[in-house]
Image (tube, rainbow, N blue to C red; front, side, top):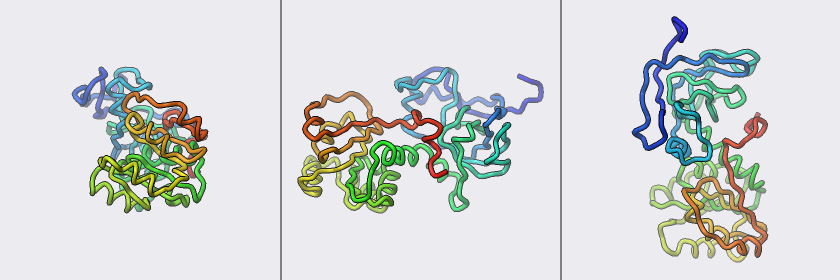
Length: 283
């Protein structure tokens, strides 16, 4: 470490495991931005389920140890590297990913993964945008290729990605159905764009959904828990319908004939798989 190099606090992971592997360190060197990179003074950082999977070592994407978790940060640009023209020191921003990790006082990010944070949003709100909203947008627009007038069921609509999916789908003119497991969750789903909501803890909730959509079925299902719901999803689909798998916590057995009968599709989505061009949402 160079003499006089600025230090910061950061959460570090030295081995995969439960929350106990998260260790606070106070002697981490503040990273220096390189070409097409920016350094952000972190004011808030989002916590996403996928980061717990990565930390546990069960996710397909495994970082080299030790590492600092955290993708969704909101803060202020501290410094910019060469060939960065979009941002300058002092700009309020949020990210969809980081290079050095967001559980820290400063985070390094590629300039193409950084976006201006509107003045009407605070930093905590900014830290909740990245993975939830960009995943929902990618699922609906890039993967499902939804069209106005289609129907969408957001299975697990009261979570971060689910609420984002409801809002985006409603804005694009879809009929939006959602599921949630509590009365509070159901109310939140309705307040965020859903036309109808169903309690997935009720034994007959699938029948209620079928009654609501009729014989045609549902055009698109955004699925947060595929290992529980995928088989039912296939039976709910319309002809040519699409199940977009955003989350799953294990395996599930399905009958492939359920996809053949309706020529339906099962498509997986992971924001980490997005190319540089496909993450320039709204630019």
